[in-house]
Image 1: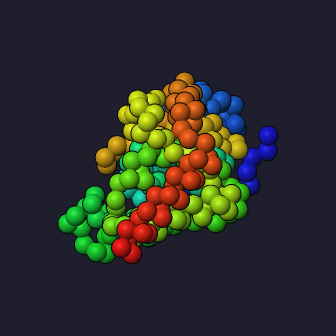
Image 2 (image 1 turned 180 degrees about the horizontal axis):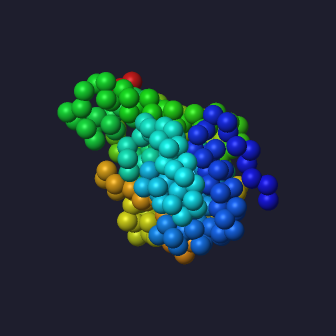
Image 3 (image 1 turned 135 degrees about the vertical axis):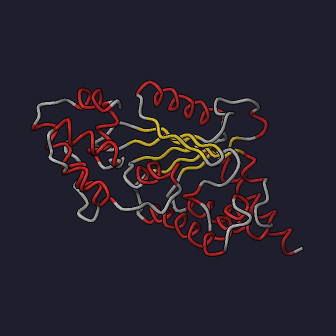
Length: 277
C-alpha cells in the first residue's frame, strides 16, 4: 500500500523517511533494527511513518548501527519542541497522523471536543497556582488539537463518554451547556460518532480509566492510556489488540448513537434551563 505523502513542513516525517531509506540500504528489517535499539519493530515503523519522533538517545544509536556519521543525531533536534506536556507529546503527534481515533473518556470531555471555557477550567483545576499565561498556553495547545476536526472526514473520531462526563459540572452550568451543545452540533454535522456509557451499565471493561486507540494508513495501530500527569503510548501488537477489544466491549455496553445524542441534548438543555433560572 502506498504511504501517505510526506508533509514537507514536518521535519519529523522527513527524518522518518530518511530512517526508512537508511534501514533498507543496510538490508535490515524493522524488527531487526528494533532489536538493536531495544524497541519493537512496530516502534521503528512508527518512527519511519512520522507518527513517533526519533529521540536524541535513539538517534545516536541509529547513527552507530546504520553508520550514518551522526546524521540522525544532528537532525533529531530539528523535529521541534512540542507544546504539549512530556507524557502526551507522542500521543498528540500520533493523533495528527491518524486515520481513526477511538477514545473512551471516563470523567471529562475529551480534549479534541473541548470548548475554550471548559478547557480553561480543566487546566485551572490541574494547576491551581499556575500563572494565567501558562493557562493561556495550555488552552491554546488544546484548542489547536481540536482543529483536526476542521477536515470534514479525517480522522474518524469515535468517542464513548461515561455518563459522569455529562453530569460533572465543570466551570458552571453555562460552561457545561455550551460544551454539550458543541458536541451535539458535531454529531449533527456527522463529523463524529459519540456513544454514552450510562451509569446503569455498572462495571465495564475500561473501569480502570481513559483509553485511546489510533489506526493509521501506513503504520501499525497504537494505544494510549493516561493517568493523572502520566501517559503511555503503546505499540506492542498483543497489547494494542487487547485495548481494541476493550473498546469494542465498551461500544457494546453503551447506548446507541441516537440514544446518546438524546441524552447529551437533554443534559445540555437542563444546564441551559438551570442557568436562566
